[in-house]
Image (cartoon, rainbow, N blue to C red; front, side, top):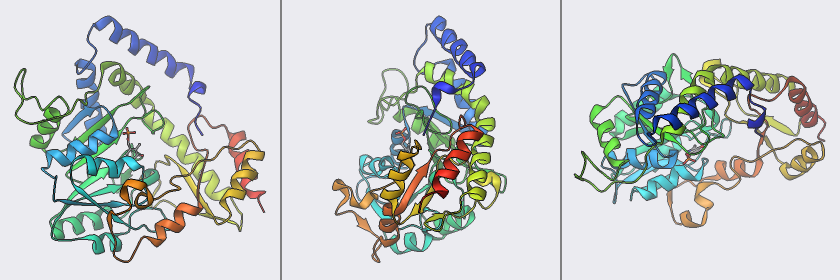
Length: 362
Ligand SMILES: *Cc1c(COP(=O)(O)O)cnc(C)c1O
């Protein structure tokens, strides 16, 4: 599902030079490399500010805390996401409310989110699942109309754009993860917050560093969620490669969308525009999923599931508030979804092999 060792020698060479630079700088946490990467990441997301943090989980928690969202406040999010999305809401002390999905895309359903609204709803954490941007103007209008804040979870959507607007610039703030497998990944953990709100950015910068406003002074109780210089230097290098990596992911996805023909498999909806999807994952649905997994295994094709257990069926969330009409679409989807290889190092021959393997399933 990933092949980091097969990355181009030129990229590895640039990364080694960056590591050397940090080693010789003698500065290892929250230094010039972090500042330089923050500038570049803000520019890439078309926001005025980016704040580097330790990971994507912390990025969401810090955004919520900087927005003063905590105990007693409800935050709506999707049942079909990485567990970190909902964990961050709990960690901020807020109450997650779980919405159902649109089974054609896996994305949170706006109608379901509407049913999740209450007098104490403060924010929506919108996940651009698999790297897809869809219906953002409708989500913005919805949030405005109901006086709730739109927070984006961009962990899977680096570089995506909808009608020229970049992922990470649609809401009050956006959380990014640079976990190695993400489209822009470090060689360890990393994350960032993007926003156009200078006050929010400075609160986030305080919260990531013990709640410290200046040396020795702690106006609030923060976290230790600092980005280190090594990861920032590597991210600056890898950011230069993001566009070409994304182009390769798009070519792979288009090849699957055109080439996979199997009555037992259903593909998700095509992207609304090429730029609006960065294909972090390529997901299909199959009612006989376990048989398909075994069939692919037998043909040396790896697969994973994103995600086989929806958020509300995880043990700590059994009593979580949710759409009063239930989360049936998400539960069915969780039983059928399957992710097949889609990463920049996949060769043309491998794309053909994966396509033929899926098509041969009966
Ligand atoms: C990876 C991911 C996260 C969490 O990021 P970490 O850096 O692993 O903490 C959050 N949300 C989504 C949708 C993710 O894919």
